[in-house]
Amino acid sequence: MISKTEISLKSKQLLQERKELIQQRKNNNNSQKKEISKEISKQLRKERKEKRLTILKKHIQKSGGIRKARKELNHKKDWIPNMKDKDKRKTCKRSEILGITTDYYKKLYQSRKVQHVIKEYNSVNKEKIEPILKEETIKSIESQKLDKAPGSDLITNELLKTTLPVMAPRLTNLFNEILETETIPEDWTKSTIILLHKKGDKEDIGNYRPISLMSNIYKIFSKIILNRITNTLDEHQPKEQAGFRSKFSTIDHIHTLRQILQKYSEYNKTYYIGNLNWTKNGLNINGENLNHLRFADDLILFSENARTLEIMLQQLSDESVKAAYRQIKWRWTGHMSRENIEKWSRLVTEWYPRDGKRSRGRPNKRWEDDLRKIAGPVWSRLARDRDKWKSLEEAFVDRQAVQQKQPVAD
Image (cartoon, rainbow, N blue to C red; front, side, top):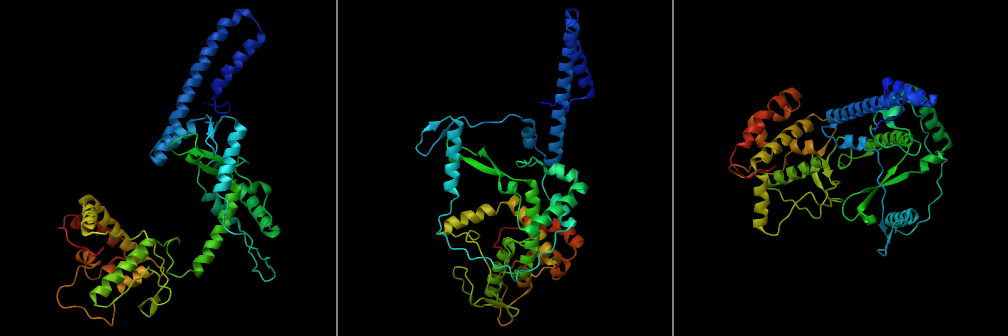
């Protein structure tokens, strides 16, 4: 489909010629009108084909697929023809379908907690809020994704980005006015909800996923506030909290736990872990207590018998998966070593219990032994050099992939 604004100049000229012939109301120009109509159809087919190929090429180069291209080329709207209510009665009336949908999601998202009395907010001693800068607005606009459906105002992210020099100062003034008056536009409190079918019976409202289409200008304002809150929270978060922060990961906590277990075992020190709830007495590393870790209970797998566990480990021993895993380990180690942020993962890796004593004989294989074989005893220092560390990656992955299977403390 091609709109009037997208047709070429040649098509517009042909349409104008046909319009003039029709307005003449002469019977002797029917053949001429017929020829022009054929030419118009031929030209429009050509332009539709060119548009389709252009859209397909754009999305293939951008994402490698055509899913978004098909979505952009599909101009039809799929209405929900029928819907079942809570009593399994089917209806095809639009008003009743809307009522079923509204009641379903109202009950789904309704809070079941007892309502508490909210104390009045005391704004006497509140901190002064700095005005929003134009640079903050520009950064927020540039961070927005393209090809996203707009809200009821129909302002797209593409429009905001192409008019950035003009819109940024005006939006900044609007946002600062909102901060001063503590009142947001009424349109921002409304959203358009669309339903996307997931799977199963299309007449069951439970098989649909609701998506709220909100104003993109509201999202830009929210992004500015979020960036400010994030910066403030990060400054006051301890290094133990890593699950949801930028530049942190639960992998850091997993690595920390495994290093502690490995080193306490190597130096014959007793350790106890109960429910992973170390809020009072934690482990002491370099004079600091590790007592605020938050571990998710789905990060560790258990088995009730040795055979099941053996099967799980055997599956992980597949050579192709093993090579990919070693590559991830090598890259993550370099990333961890070069981070300027204080993390338990790096502290624990470089630490060992000074008051413990190792057993005689060859110790069990340790996490860093694989790294030492390739990078030597100064692997931690070498990992801080990105180029040198990357140059050894292939050797590490290839060597580990062909080794004999043996217990590894990863």
